[in-house]
Structures are given as structure tokens and as C-alpha cells.
Image (cartoon, rainbow, N blue to C red; front, side, top):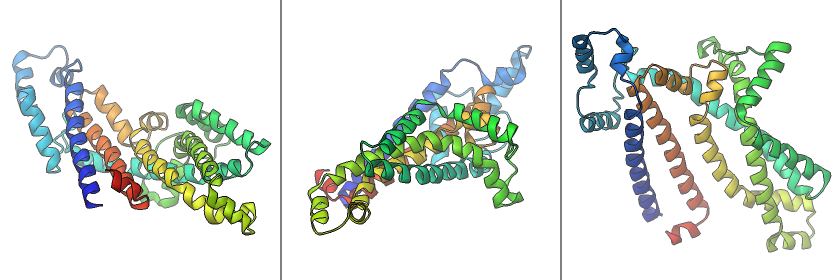
Length: 315
């Protein structure tokens, strides 16, 4: 297990190094100069040069990359060009919206997917199975921002059960915060629930065809008893892997949803920083999101190896 962990840790470090280089390169080659954007088209050359020096933009790209990576390693994400505040403080404030939203959506998708997948697998080929698979196919095909707009139209505009957007803040209470995040979380959860339900059904059907399931039935267990006592537990291994991957996606992939609901999260921060050419914020936030995705994948690999020893012997 130690050897397997070290190899996965080395792979994580290499992935982070490559990701940092790609992120910095892509953002730096994007057209537009932050200093020129801040001062406008009528800025004087001397003023522009002074601002570029103040922002550190006059250094070479290699120096800026090494300075940025060194700051990330020490927890210093730099200072925003636009707001002139530490990027770490901006990320910390926005994280208290994006992280609960991702967790809320993950819980909702799991609560929807597990019963749907189990129900479809237990009624394979029947009307219930066909209905669930048809609904999940629709959930996979329809983008989450369409769900978001439909939810706003129905529950915010027509029924007025929820606000159409914005976030009241956790200082107003847990219920108020969760209430504000409910529609965005549902919009994020529905497509993920559709994927997870299909994986749950497929995994459970594979398990139901195993010899030990037939042995359990031969010993007198009913189909329902064999499913819950032996089938479900063994079918959860690939499903838990998908759940781990979905969490990282929900954390990093909520930019559009946060725009639709005007949530002050990391996704909206990235969008605003791109519009303002605040490169240091974009680089740092995107790198943090990439790190969360890679870290979750690393933890899922370790958990999977702990459950299935065959993976450790192959690596």
C-alpha cells in the first residue's frame, strides 16, 4: 500500500506541475494587458509603465511564473490587480459559497440517484426500468443551465417559493443560507444524479449476475433480501468512485450556475476576473480548482485501492 501511495503521490505532483505551467501559459497568451485595461486607452506611456512595474508585469514571464508558483507553495496567492486585496482573502470569502453549494448538490444527487438506480436494476426490462432510464437519458442530455432557468421560472417567478438569485450570507442562519442555495444545488444535482443512477443500475446488474448472488438465492433468500444484503454493498465500489469525481466537478464546474443565480462564489469570481483582465486572480482560482480535482482523484484512488487489494498488486 505504501508503494502504491507514493506512486500516486508522485503522479499528483507531476500533474500539478504540468497544470500550473499550462494555466499560466494559456492565461498569459490571452490578448489584453491588465495595466492598459485598468488605465484606459488614453493613458500616458509613463503612467502605464509605472503601473506595470507596480503590478510586476514588467518582469519576464519565467520570473513571473516562478514567483507565482513559489507564492502558491507558501500560501501567498498574490494581490488582485483590480481590487488591490490579497487573492487568498477573496478566495476564502467565495469558498464559503462554492463549497457548501457543491456539497449540497452532491447530497441531492446521491439521494436521487441511489433509489432510482436500485429501483431500475430490481425491475430490469420492466416499465419502471424503462421510465427511469428514459428520465436519466433526459437528465444527461439537458444542460444544467437550462434546468436552472426552468427552476427560476417555476419556483422563483411563478410560485415565489425561492429567490431568483443572490445569497443572503451564512450570518442570517443555516436555514436561510441553504434556502438560497437550494435552486442552484438542484440545477447542479440533476444531471449528476442522472449519471450516477445509470452507473448504479449498471453496477448492480453486474453484481446480480455473480455466482454468490445465485448461491444466496439458493439458500432461501428472496430477491429483495439478496439485493440488499449482498448485492448493494458490492455494487457500491464503482459508484463511490463516481461520487468522488462528481464532487470535484461540482466544485470546479459551477461557473454558469453561479452566473445564472448571481452567487458570489469562485465561479463568478473567475468570470469577473476574466472580464477585468485580473490575471493573478484567474490563475490562482483556476489552479486551486485544478488542485481540488486532482486531490479528490488521488483520494479516490487510495480509497479504491483500500477496498480492492488487486489494484495495489498491479501497481
